[in-house]
Length: 371
Image (tube, rainbow, N blue to C red; front, side, top):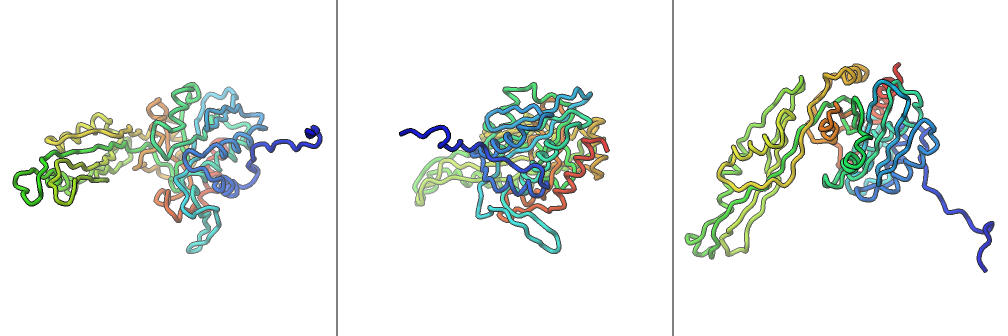
């Protein structure tokens, strides 16, 4: 006999986050929801469910991106974004509190990159019903993997209207400081060609691996530039990040490849960075396999200067590439601002200082509320 309606239990709805808790506790809640890139649905569902009753927010779901925005008719709009995915877990969940040299930390995957920043954003999104500017909050998936999967990029392609704004803040870890813009990145494969032969008669062959010698010498001797862009000094980097070649232990190889990563200041375009590689290695076969434009700081915009003043620290350059470049490409000045030391991102002992979480919340709350 079928169960009667009264005897059937209702299907459980999505879990909810306690956004009335402290930003430290919210960080722990969302970190303990494992969301390695590609598995973000559970956390995205929890975020959406937790904000569903916030009458001051319009909620939009796009795949595993959740967008929440105010519609108050303010003169300016700020976009505040953070990714909800992490690199793979390595015995560093669930989270735990620990004290190191007198400082209190939350330890675990995602605490730095970048769920502490997301936790601050979620708490403020829920609580600030009347910010002094309109705010579009964005939480997106697949930041830690290939660019074509990036949820922010897919959202921009499908819903460019959601990216209308005068300023953007990305919650990437920045030690609670403002980091303007970001370097661009270029990855190339440089190949050499030779002729196979038996290694016992090497003189009839042409060793492709040996031809990489001058390339490696150039890389080892290269002095990266330090480039000032709008008052911030960006450090470039040029490095071999992979090498391959060889056929067998008794064969002279006819092909070899070195993979090179160039991190270039935002004063250069991808085309200019690529041209620089051809200048350095004019006689070699070069294939561009990955490229992303950098982002200029944009700190000359009045709203950006106002934010920097509210945080109360000298802005710094962002050496790595981040999604601020996506906002910059749309003409929106953008900065990185979030708790956590970037050097601890992806580390097995990833941990964030509790004080940086609470200080970041306090600064962003004060700026958005106007006091």
